[in-house]
Length: 558
Image (cartoon, rainbow, N blue to C red; front, top):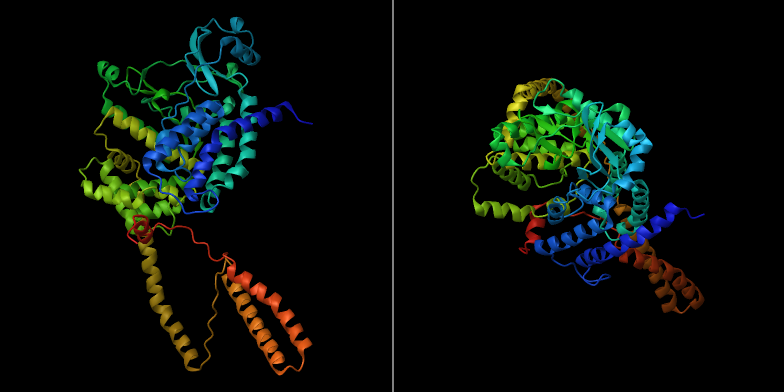
């Protein structure tokens, strides 16, 4: 029996296909000029931005679920080219609130009659988003903010998720094999993320945990949740008002040190990610305000994440390597975190890291060198996709947005210097040096042990060689069955050669024409098998690698 949700999902699927089909066809034509055949086409960044604008329009047209999908895609450079990331990063979850008459039943189902529960309640929402909206009220003499889930959004999201699930197999047919993992990964991540954002009980738990972690820090203010008014669809919390963090004119009028404010913001996020392992993941200016004493107010913990101990340590290693300008250390940390392929060209990536560090520090860069490196690595993350864990993608987004806010507050802000100072104060750099010394000591001990044990073993090997008694075992890693294919082709070739020779001999002597016919009939199927094996293009499928040769080829030098 077809349910109402399925009927809605079918309709949404039709709308989604209508919106995305032109983009899918365009993407396919970039790979094959005439859809089914022909070479690829070169697409300029300007053309990519035009397509990204069309994608943005489609997402906005399709509504709340797809606005959230666009925000998620803006954190995934392993799925979309840089031009798309740039356009989608501007996507703000800011939509007109639903009418009060539609919102009231949702609120009263959770807390009871509005006029009986609250001393005062302002029916005009103070902010609206795709999944919820916020109202201002007075409860037991205290001002509170009431976040209410958008009416009917659950059914819409459920239908959209089903439509996207049906669309995924279609979409996978139009993407190359290298990006298939990333697309499937994003689909799973999105399903989890949007359900978490609609669960206000989870948001209340995350808010409380982060608030507790900063209980002794007077530079951050996190609202206290009102538990008796909160549920899965309603979140009530202390109302805190302040100046929007990017309103620099008002901040200056109130005498707030913007450089100190930027440093405080970065230190707060370093503690969240490196020490606490739980972080607020949506630090755009709409979710950050500043009180008159310079403390920072954090709003909206619906988008939040966790970092496990392994990633915390690797992030520390990365920051320490950046602080020491240890390019090899930076690349090693990126490889261990899975954000850089082990087969990447380390020399080129080293140039990229040096350029990035100099840019963050605000150093003067030679325009020629900048253009040279940019040309080398243009679209590298997209062309050579990475497998980004969900929370690491969130961390990348957080770092980018926080840096943008900090630079807005202080154009001379040095992200690396603040991170270096923080790591030094917390003892991470000293710990890193200690670990390096211990590692060097272990290597020295192993080397000394080898000096004692290797010569006798070497003597044994030389004795075996002298006695002609040395056996070497070789194991070949043949994941693509290349040797198996080669063996079949050799066998088929031998059989065909023998068959043709036998047939020719029998016919030439004219002794046994029937036997010659039989030999020819037997040889023919083997010949067909040989032909098919030679025509088959299933060999070793090498994915494009980040190499200087590939870069030169793309620039037309080869």
